Length: 115
Length: 116
Image (cartoon, rainbow over all chains, first blue to last red; front, side, top):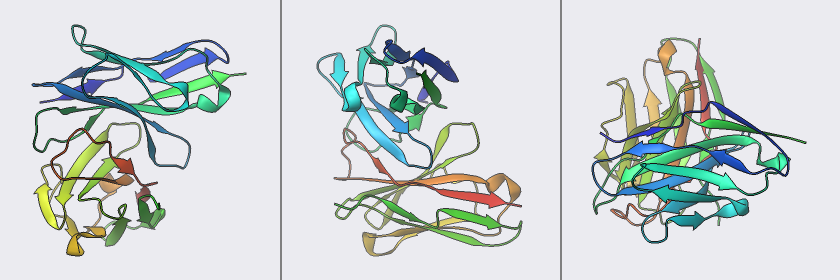
């Protein structure tokens, strides 16, 4: 069974500092990995995904994530945090092979960026 | 292009009552998904439609939940009778092209269900 772990319930960072939101995963095959963000009273918005190729993927709003197969991780990063980045972040994984597979989410990490 | 819409945004009902949630996916999207998030927990998969057919309903909690997707367009999720543990936020999502797991899913704003 596939699973996702987001070990931190909350991450606090000062504006202008780099941020990292951690995610590790477990799947039986090749993983397809996704990051979503949820702002208050809004639905989940897609940020970025890793399917294949370059381990460093770039997404919306200056975010990027690095796929590390040996560590089964897909940490979300941003070089310089903004107060407006404060939100709830979800990592998700699904099995890669063709066909249908479910998307499994982590429990979410609240990111708080202080001015 | 309109995004995924859900109705209602909030619903407060009493235990034993019936509630029906509606989702309108992005036009032309074959895949429609329902998820639920109970307070502070993971977002859990409920079921997946490909057009009008149920592809996977392994996440449906029990037979009090009934989902339909009429004509492969909008979908409804009915809970009858509602129990306290059904409270949570119900998300709908859609994506293009059946069977293409590489594509991201587009989520609606969710329906917050409170069962008293």
